[in-house]
Length: 432
Image (cartoon, rainbow, N blue to C red; front, side, top):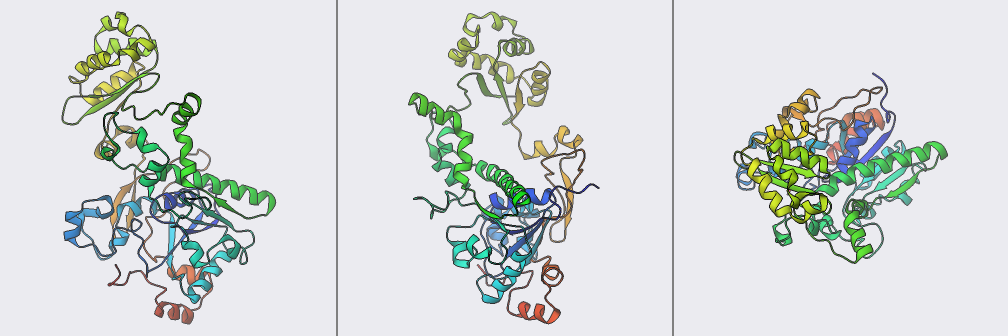
């Protein structure tokens, strides 16, 4: 198999929750050796689960994604079974060390000295308290690249503020653009678009820094404020305000320049989304619906007329979709050149024949979870074929390899660090 583009690059992974681990997952997919630095004495909520030892009662009462362990069973090591972590834990290595203690700092500095990149997205001041700053780390590795992913930046009035994706998206204006115009923001569910977007863009920033170092030999710190990285995705609304002084607000399923809607189909909670931008698309829609008369209706004569009279047009489209099976209508419209899609749930996506033919979901076997299908790679390259290489990494799974093979600790030193609590594959039973 051809070499992957990042083979030979070592990344120290101090990331938490989703956006940071998603970034390092992409870099691992591209061939980088990603080593997660984890601590047994501190459990990061929303990273390896909700709590280290969830009871069955808790799992039954709080059926959230952070507690949705396979078959709703905690197993011996629940932290290795949580779906969110396992969704981005592939192709990585893991070792444990307590960075709050001097001997842990020594271990960490040894690793930094032989690494290329360090990536973190922890709460404000966490890295400063641990001494994990660019100014300090470059003493051990002058060419190190440090990628920091604060919510709002390392400077400014919000620099010390904490945020998950849903709060961050609210602060930058995304929440006010979602939902229906006649509902208040409290009725709009959480979304985590900024996590996925931020992970991809932070990986791109890392690649840029690696390219710069290859050309100049210089390391650097990359500041990646998640809020500022997400703002460009809301550009139309901001430009509307800057140019016209208008606050757009939520449009529901409507669009400023096209007929767009979500329409009910046969069955329970089955829906179809349709967009009409051009006259040709509208005429094709009329043919598929068996309503050629609508294409001659003066209310729908052109794009502006259709937008002005969308309430009436929506009623005509809904009258047709209610008689249609969603996937059949989706295929018929697409065959006619009309942009359309099914509102799918997770079960629909997993069984989608298109993804099946493309072998998107791949099976991985992990000791604590068993064999399950996972989302595949985000890209396919003809000259560098790739696939998922390692299953979701277990806590401390590569302790011996990192300490002894990579960092050169002998057996006696390894046992001493183990006795001090740095090394292990379990969280303490009393940890909360």
